[in-house]
Amino acid sequence: MIIIIIIYKWMLEPELAWTSLPDLLDLAEDAVRHSVRAAQETCPDEMAFFAERNAELEGNDDEDGNGATSSRSSAVNLSEQLALLANPGRSFARISYTEAVDVLQRDSDTTIRWGDDLSSAHERHLTETHCGGEPVFVTNWPSSIKPFYMRTNENENENEGSDHETVACFDLLVPGVGELVGGGDSCLYNMFHGII
Image 1 (cartoon, rainbow, N blue to C red):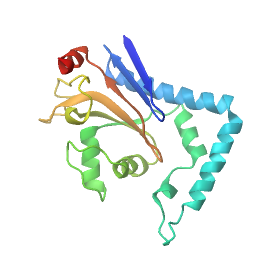
Image 2: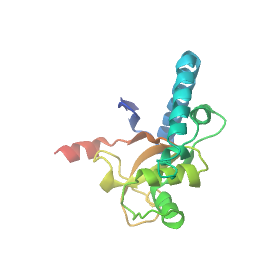
Image 3: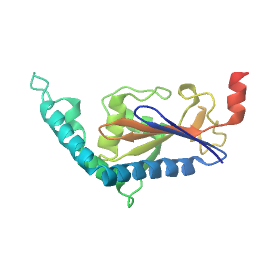
Image 4: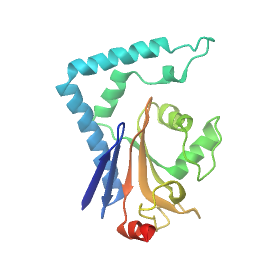
């Protein structure tokens, strides 16, 4: 198994070859839980500072000056969010991209078609409304909006019976944050084929 983990300024990007997508989701979930617990245990003063600062920002942003509530006020309290992320007793929700689009078309005020990327409004609806304020993995995205080296889903279950081509990848969406982790099952064939 080859594990590639890329850490950007704000997110983790694990990609594994020769493994299954569920295994990759488990790895990402464990990495997030470990990171949050380690930060809470080794940096309690800094975590308390961030929680206080976040509470101040939320308090200042409750209204936009016109009496309207800002989108930030719907964000989950930082301490509660970290506790939720660190809780090993409950797995993060998992839905496919196709299911996510169906939910958004049915239950939200936003417009989306299969093949569109998710906006921050879509991510908020999925995490804060559909999943009740909990993190959610969105899996099996359209190949047209993901990197060329992602493994193409070949069986009907992975493509959910649709005529659309999907790839074995995911985004972990977190309430009040959006995408925290993104990754997928890399395929060397796709990688070399995309380069040549």
